[in-house]
Image 1: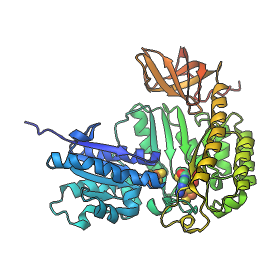
Image 2: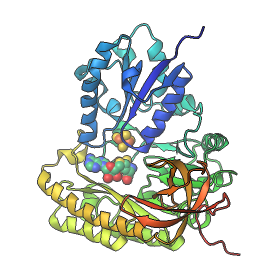
Image 3: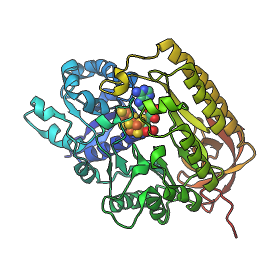
Image 4: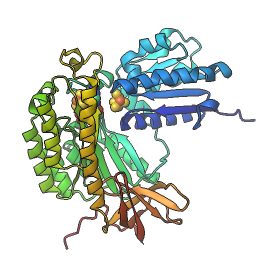
Amino acid sequence: MTTPSKRVFIKTYGCQMNVYDSEQMNTLLRNQGYSDTQTAEDADLIILNTCHIREKAAEKVYSELGRMRPLKENRKGVKIAVMGCVAQAEGAEIMRRAPVVDFVLGPQSYHHLPRMLNAENTSQDMRLATDFEVDDKFERLAARRGAQSPAAFVTIQEGCDKFCAFCVVPYTRGAEHSRSADQITAEVRALVRHGVREVTLLGQNVNAWADPQEGDIDGLGGLIAHLAQIDGLARIRYTTSHPRDMDDGLIAAHANERKLMPYLHLPLQSGADPVLKAMNRGHTLDHYKALIARIRAARPDIALSSDFIVGFPGETDADFEATMQAVRDIGYASAYSFKYSPRPGTPGAARDDQIPEPLKAERLAALQELLGAQQTSFNASMIGQTLPVLLERPGRHTGQVCGRSPFLQSVFADAPNARFGTMQMIKIENANRNSLSGTFCATTDEADPDMRKKSA
Ligand code: SAH
Ligand code: SF4
Ligand code: F3S
């Protein structure tokens, strides 16, 4: 007789790094006899993988924990764990404020959960794990998950040494740390064996990646060229990169590697030099624009994306207008933008020239209108083109499928018999702000992964 397996429910907030970590956690727990469930109500173990980047993100954890309290009261033996960046930043406070929480695990301590679950003695020390021990984490979590989608994330670098004045990441994820090229290559090969066709290499500063084994693979550009040799892998992406770490080798990869997709997320944050300086970004607007010019020379059709923060302390109307003008000058295919949120312990939060909320909201609305118009017109420029699309999942209605264009746009098409994981040529007929749709042209895995004209 087999004992029924326990069920785990994981809810993930924040960035792709958390999505990757949640998948790793899932695999780890599967090896411990847990199966996953999509509802908290029937779970034996509930895990919240949290984000601390802005106040709203962090506060969600406490309201979610409040909602989960009855689940624990109604069923005996249910355990609740908080992992991720809020766990790292305020682990002890979580235990104090939310007694429903059984375990707290910072991003570098996930491999401790099985031990914590099995421990008889759950003293406070045993329930809180927030040490930094990155090597251990990757080694212990390396047991590979079965691929769930043809497009997968692979963390190659974690942590940050840049200390932008607004940001908590250096405190929650620790110092910059790169995984070895060997470890990454093995993981990507295993994913491809499981049917993965596209990988997105992840890091808080992914382009600061450097092989800790000091082999002959030079920086992220070298790593991409190395991974591009893996048969069966069709597409490579990477995120998030910092303008200061965009080196010649990486720019060259955009010119030379057909599997590297023509899309780059390169956050600018602000278009005003005094604000960039106050943010400690370490570059000026001119430096960023010069970089973009070199990248566009290497890959003329590249789609650019960025993050922006409005209302950083001291931001004047003229500073904000400089951001608007930078967006008009550069032109983005997509972008994320946020109101500045003062985070405890960061230099920005201590400043006495905070911008009032209504002014932040006004600036954000203006910026989002401009970015939205750029995104809509970029998407509309695809109408009439035939794009290679990697089919990833079912669409909104029966018979519809959804995949990504080379430029990371969601593309919908009716194709009831299409197989996920194949590359399809789709003629784009409609576009709106968030997605494209069109009709099937050809079923071929010969589709050029980046649709660049091959020179004969
Ligand atoms: N490493 C990346 C960013 C990681 S955080 C980089 O350097 O670009 C993702 C985005 O969240 C940031 O680019 C920034 O735009 C936003 N962000 C970070 N801290 C913030 C804060 N305190 N308030 C508002 N937005 C913030
Ligand atoms: Fe945060 Fe700056 Fe590091 Fe990005 S580079 S993670 S914004 S401190
Ligand atoms: Fe959030 Fe941590 Fe990612 S703070 S954005 S989950 S690195």
